[in-house]
Image (cartoon, rainbow, N blue to C red; front, top):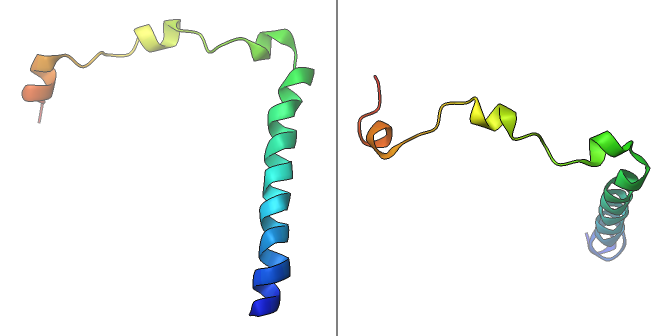
Amino acid sequence: MAFFRQYIAPLIVVLIFLFALFVVSARIFLPEDMMAPAPISTILSSPILTQSSVNNPRV
């Protein structure tokens, strides 16, 4: 168990960190239209919860 705690667990943590760093850095190489923020128009088309709909939900 000590071998796992001293060698394997830190290696797994470092590999996860390096993978996350690679994935986040890959945004540089994406086309510009994919680097833009998400469109807001899809959010506006969804129903917005108001105070009355929170207090009186439809059953």
